[in-house]
Length: 218
Ligand SMILES: [Mg+2]
Image (tube, rainbow, N blue to C red; front, side, top):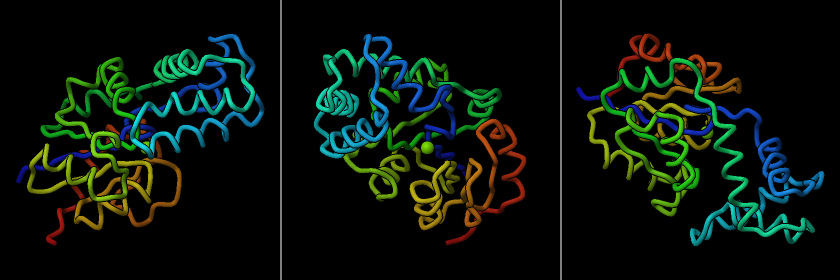
């Protein structure tokens, strides 16, 4: 039976060094402004509100929110600097590329913004090992909705699926409800996942660990 391996992207296949506050600080530095103390909350709100409208780049929404909060910046310039800083912070743990290369059917289903997620895939060198990608803006819906899962499984036909992700709410639970085997990546509490790996650095152990978990008949 063909197995489709579905992966979340952020903090599952890639990690960030620095993480979001540091990324935004680096972006501000690149355009010559000092981020406010509550920058993380401001940009998160702008990002989410813009993304949910599926009309334009959420990075632009985040930058506009920062400007509206008093940052003296051109939002277009800050948005581009934010994307560049995020790309520069994107890190692929050792062995993850080899793992994807060893799997015959690999899909990525991510709540991230398509143009940026696809640039990350290209620039990290993971892209050649990935057979299909579905981002939130591709389907105008976010996990745990069915639409992203329907789209990735339509693009990657298989008899059985394994979902690997770092969110119980967005990755593990919806995949389990669809009858997929689930692999949680992270240090949180994910007792409902079939397998738990404590960090993306442990992903290379995935095939060996999965051998012990039989596909379930639903
Ligand atoms: Mg994630």
